[in-house]
Image: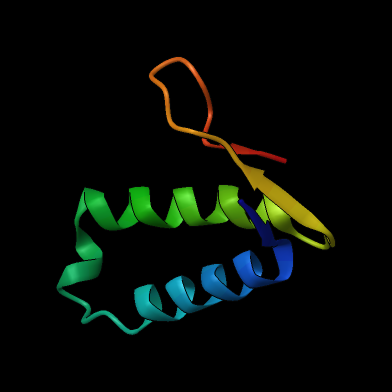
Length: 67
């Protein structure tokens, strides 16, 4: 199955908006900082790229997304 990278960028933007909209109390934990780091890594991975990505079957030793 292929997914347009533009759609992934749109989804990552929505996740970013969700994180920014959390109450201040929720932003104090380690989970929030880890979520921000993961989002930043994904945004760097997909920044400015066009085309499609291929989703591969999940296995313990394989990555899900190959860019």
